[in-house]
Amino acid sequence: MIIRQDTSNIIRRDTSNRRERIVALLREQGSVQIPALAERFRVSTQTLRKDLNFLDDKGICTRSSGGAILRRSGPSPTEEAIDVKRTLFAEEKIRIGRAAAALIKNDESVLIDSGTTALQVARHIEASASLAVVTSDVGVMNEMVAREKVHLVFLGGTLRRKNLSFYGTQTERALQDLHVDKLFLAADGFDIEKGLTTHFEPEALLNRLMCKAASEIIMVADSSKFGRICLHKIIESQGIAKVVTDTGIPDATREALLRIGVEVIIA
Image (tube, rainbow, N blue to C red; front, top):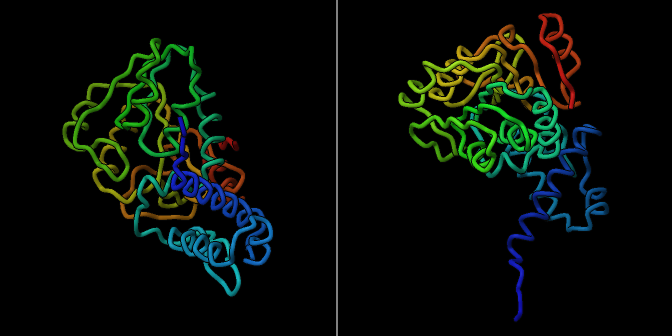
C-alpha cells in the first residue's frame, strides 16, 4: 500500500507556524526585515511579503519598506474568522489556557466563553477534575464530552459559524437560572477606560448575562487585545477579578489593572 500525504495540509501548517514565529519576532524586536526573515526561514522574499501582508491585514503589524513594524494598538473594526484566529498568538493562547485552567478547583462550577483562547482553558483542565462546565462553544463542548467526571451543560441557541458558538434568546434564557463559581471570559478588545468589548452585539448581550451568573470573572486574552476598542461593551474593567495574559501586556495597562484591584497573571 502506498500512503500519500496531503501536501496542501503540510503547506498550510508550515505557513501557519512560520507566521506565528514572525509574530513572536515582531513582539520581541518591534520590527522585522524581509532579508533577515528569508535567511531565518529559508523561504523566498515573495512568500515573506505575503506573510507580512497577511499580518498587516489582521492588524498585527504595519508594512514598512523591506519589512514590518509591530502595531501596538488601534481601532479594531472587524472580527477575524475562527480559522484565522487559530493562527494568531497560538503559543501565547496555549500558555494562557494552561495558567487559567490551574485556577479551577475540584467540584467547582465554571462557565467557559467561546473563542480560541477560552478553548485552550478547556483543553488544559485536569483530565481527572470533577466539575460542572457550562458553555455555548462547540469546541469547548467537544473537549468536555468524553470526560466522565464533568457535568456538562451546553447552552443551545442559534449557531454562529464565524466562531462556532451559539447565541440568541434561547441561549440567554438557558443562563437565567444558572450560577457558576468562575467565568472564563474572552474579549476582542480591552481598554482600561472602556472595559471589555466585542464586535458582535448578540455576543455582548450574552456575555453580560454570563457575568451576572458568575461569582468571579476571569478574563483570558492574549496581549494583542489590549488597547483595542470594539463596538459593543461587555463589562467595565472594575468588574473583572483576574486577567490571565502573556508577557506582551503593556506595562501601563498592567499597572492600571493592579491599581483598580484586578489581579494580573502572566503566562
